[in-house]
Length: 249
Ligand SMILES: Nc1ncnc2c1ncn2[C@@H]1O[C@H](COP(=O)(O)OP(=O)(O)O)[C@@H](O)[C@H]1O
Ligand SMILES: [Mg+2]
Image (cartoon, rainbow, N blue to C red; front, side):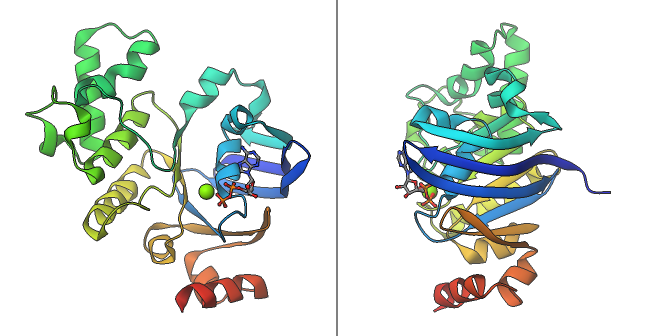
């Protein structure tokens, strides 16, 4: 049976008087990677930011319903919602502290004081991000001394420190080279055993490599949802077909 962790019903998002997302009905399966693709400006980031209500910080107004584990997100305390549904923004930044302090920042904010527990959180989540072996001898050096690819993995590791169930990633590889992109993809394929991942990507080959499901969006609406095989090889909607053709050439 399908295990649905997130579900939208007639989801609309408006910025002021502009209707950006239009009647989105979709379900996300637990422990899967869902990739969201579509032309620039079609609403991918807005959609991602709706799940944990960060869109509201940007002046967006959510209408319709989003359910997380069968609860309306509007009934979940905001802090709980945002630790359960973690988000890594496009061009994320490491904090101007040590690697260690980047990793303990959120747990300390949430009240964790126990030194051993904090150490454990740092090590466990750096290991999950595949970064531990690279940084274990330098945990006290400034995070900003790491390479771009390492910083990107650190930001994802940092998002894991508050035990999210869902991780939202907005074009996490857009500034990375092939090797660092491969590192992130490898990490995501391992993380999906424990987390549900929703990733916006402009890289169709990436969606093909890592996604279980692909959502094609256009003009604030979902055009088509399917497996990577369906979306990339046998799309049913002519708009999907056109976009895939366009992006291939
Ligand atoms: N904070 C905002 N205020 C007003 N309009 C916005 C805001 N953020 C995005 N938009 C508009 O919403 C639309 C969708 O943007 P976005 O979700 O960023 O698209 P994508 O991520 O697919 O490129 C665009 O027309 C954009 O100009
Ligand atoms: Mg975007």
